[in-house]
Length: 480
Image 1 (tube, one colour):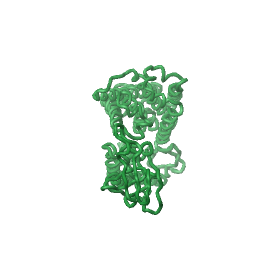
Image 2 (image 1 turned 135 degrees about the vertical axis):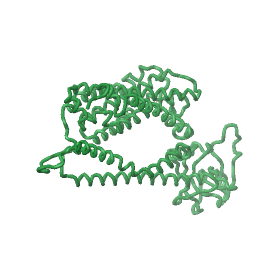
Image 3 (image 1 turned 60 degrees about the vertical axis):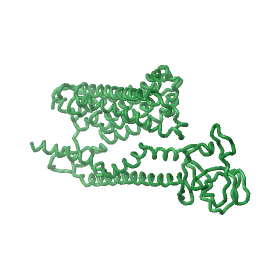
Image 4 (image 1 turned 90 degrees about the vertical axis):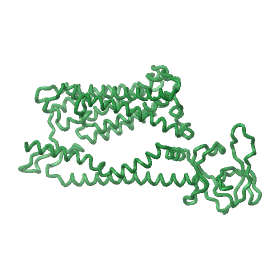
């Protein structure tokens, strides 16, 4: 086997059939990442008047800063997903399958192969990230926001540091672990650790300050946040370890679990390396592999069904809550959920909060100051009790709109018109319902579970089918 076009060209191909197609895939991935982050921005705009506008105001404010920040936060997650899917082609995972061994026997230097793979991954990560960042800026231009680019270099560098760190960690794990699955698990845990480190070092707080980010040097100052310094040092350290480790592994030959003799004199004396865990097992230990396959199949099926059932249950609950927010109410074990759509009861109940009311049956006297849900003229109202005269209650709102006269919305209702008594609210559930009622929420909560249900068999058996085809190819090559 010889590399067409040289070692470096083959490394840049990352499993693609040609170099042109490989760069096309990288460009497509970068543009898709930018477009996806831009879609997240529109998704955020549908939840503008919710708790997200208070907790994440820098991502909700229309402008270049919000769209670029969303891409910076999503880019390392999307790139990690790419590395998990392309672990064996983009990283050193191909060493486990001895794909470099024929080249080394033919005279290619292992260090050159390692260097080409490392350079290809770093430059590919730089290219795809840059294309995605440019895509976000390009799409934001059509929204005709005020063009402000002073903070873009700082945001670009912050996201690039995360992507290069995940790339170096991918090389590090794939150089030390023969098990592909172990490397993927560690890479996933590293992403979670990265997100935690950015929060713990105050880097997330720094990225919220648009005025400070107009100076590029700010994000590199350790007194503000040590994250970028640690990320750079850690990336360099992992590369310095992974390159010699991969060089050592490239000079060895590993017997794949599928490549063993068809007949053995004493099967119990021969060992094979497990593809998934890297453990040594006897060749005749096939029933154990079948049991593991069935257990993994059952686990994937269970997780898919749990996710689908949770999505369906959530949709049913949201439909019931939406029914409550119109001219009728739904009681769930004595609790009436109600999505509040005004600011009339702020700050006790804010816009888009999910207010929870205890169903009122006249079993206890109500006190002045309590917030109640009542039906008058087939319209649902939420107001506070300001006066009580026997079974007659005088109600009013807490927050009158600007320009309106106070006490103009006072209502007098009979006790039998009261439906529920307010006892709690949830801003996060209110935001979830607001998202679910948007077009993005409908696609996520309705279309995505249906697709999973339809393609669950293909999802479960994809990896096993790839292993079967690989083994079939080995058998055919032996016969030839």
